[in-house]
Amino acid sequence: MLFEDPRTLLKDEIKQLEEEGFDTSEVVDSLNWYLIMNRHFDINDARYFFYEILKDLSKREEFGYNEPSEWEKIVSESSFEIYEAPKFSEKELFNRIYGGLLGRAAGCMLGKPVEGWTREKILEYLKIAGEDHLEYYFPAIENDSEEFKIYFKETLRNNLKKAIRDDDLDYPIINLKVLEKYGTNFTPENVGHVWLENLPFGLVYTAERAAYRNLVMGFKPPETATHMNPYREWIGAQIRGDIFGWISPGDPKKAIKMAYEDAKLSHTKNGIYGEMFIAAMLANAYIYNDPKKIVEEGIKYIPKNSRLHEAITFVLKLYEETSKWEKAWEKVMEKYGDYHTVHTINNACFVVLGLLYGEKDFGKSICIAVESGLDTDCNGATVGSIMGIMLGAEHLPEKWIDPLNDTLESLVPGFQTVRISFLAERILKLLT
Image 1 (spheres, rainbow, N blue to C red):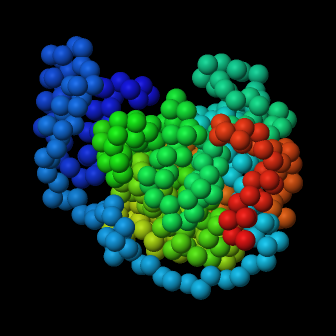
Image 2 (tube, rainbow, N blue to C red):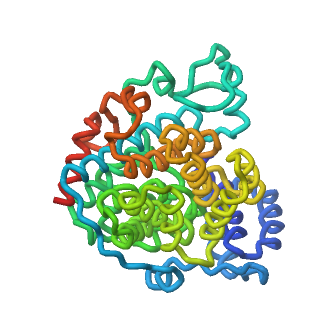
């Protein structure tokens, strides 16, 4: 996707507005005419549509969701519960945090070679390799055609020697820097400052790139999330909240408040809820040994009348009614297949499919999340993180963890190549 292309930017904004319940029918006709008449459509033309044509659209009457972005309204629309967080020994905290990091790295590496692929394409690739379903890191195949080209061959089976750089692994480190510098009461402005100091603009994407651009232009949160940002409900925030759950054992409210402050820099509505949902599940993974319970507790902290809450509730219902995850996947695609491949809602559904149908098995859980397709590295990483916290490093299967050699790469200054165990120790210090 050419993010900087003004035509793409505007078309994505119209789709986003449609998903938020606005009536864009007349705008589409106006845009099509305008594009025909203006062959050299530039950013100023896009800005004109954003802030003149699109600013006063009305909501469709049948759109019945209530999706606030303000903290107080989110709280009022949710079922917040306050728990007395249990006490864990320092040894057990390290075991869980290390498990979360290892699980995230393994799930990310599993999904990285097929990022953006459909499930159909993944299955076709596996068939060429002589395998029916995904059960381990992807094998190499001789048919290295453009259709099945793998851009990160170092993540393939027998090639994997470490967790190579990926934004899903960068953001826990970025937020470690946020927490070390500003503490748990950080603000979105604090997060933006750390981004500008540590993230190269060319390696941030969609909503994060829009927010970064807005920061440089002098905008402040929450406008950084809304100014010419059609990607404000995409998956970017959902992959950034892990560390907030990791440092909130049994305390989901603490985790989601930090997730909210982080997400508000770049996202709104369901984009914010996605990060809160993941952070809540991670905090609860310390105290529940049942993935279904973790999911059920996690959705209490997002607005009941939101599209994300509806989607996760839908997957929970499918789990009760459908014994095969493949059939449940088909129904999810029927209902949510029109969302972009990196949207929060459809990918969150695949995360939940992996957790529910994985039956507490680490490998099975991340394989279901990745075989589901779409944002495979993100979903594999998130499921791996939750399972890693739930099981702890000591109970993660060696076949998934040993190939990582306790090593992770990132683009974050000071962490370009780092021991995963060292990261766990550093995160543990936030709790001790």
